[in-house]
Length: 382
Ligand SMILES: Cc1ncc(COP(=O)(O)O)c(C=O)c1O
Image (tube, rainbow, N blue to C red; front, side, top):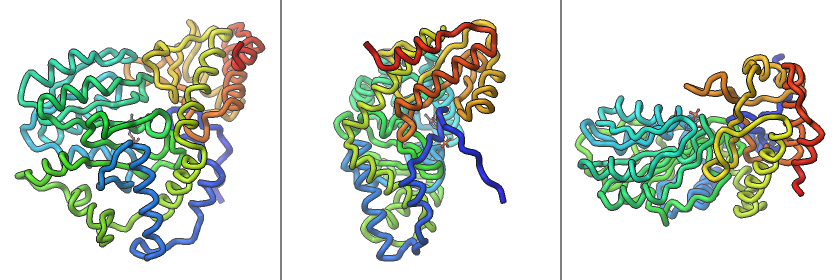
């Protein structure tokens, strides 16, 4: 029998699941239309609305990983020839632009260097420069650790009559989202980051404005992602669209129950505090974060390697000697940085202490002289 080893998941996702979530996944199966399953759907949809900060009726956990949520938004909101402004400052902005292009959209990219924030004035100018139908941005860029301020972009999109869609795969459950207040028309995420549910669901939400746009389309929407058909199952009717992944929804509900018990604000504070503790511990090891704290997302910290440390050897040491996974750099940052995720159930002080001790050991193995005691002491602050 195959048996996975116990690895502490401190990379960019998946994050570790709690024992409660893991137990929920092994509950007995129910039919996806069984009256006893409907309360799970109701609970999941209500909990997701709270996390997205929306009252959108069409808010649901789509089957598929985070990228399927992106595809659902593109499939419903982009028609061939539509002008779409895409913020590109990391791998997932590149992916969003690619997906829009594949749907025939006329992509206008607003680019920032990997590790930098998007310039809101450049976004506004691009939106206003033509008949923009849609603007999309990644809220927390997992490839760099930059958190985008959505407010000015949402405002510019609304002023131009464009829809605004957000990738909140890494931010949901880790920082506050208030999408109705901001004027976000569609958003998608995944479950494997700050929700600490295994990968396999893509919660999505569509505003009434977005659904009006779908109703006015001249091109059909692919079957699986069609919001009208999704509404059949996830709306009042509860009729068959596809066979919902029952165990994944049990796990999502368990996670939402845990979030409810902890309290949203307490959860956001925990993510902030744990990330600050990690940052305090990096300097004594001779490590520096890539992104200044004001622009950084708390759940994902990108750390620059000191000269002479080999990325693959460093991460192999962590995995083999300490049973810890962290992520490597992506795109232009490959080999230059590693990425530390403190997300959901993984965002705990004991994990920060274990990680810093392991980083120190891996740096020592690479010939450096990190001050591990000072790093561990720094975690607790002054
Ligand atoms: C910001 C962001 N967007 C999109 C995705 C794609 O999600 P998935 O890999 O679950 O398809 C990820 C995955 O890490 C991500 O971090």
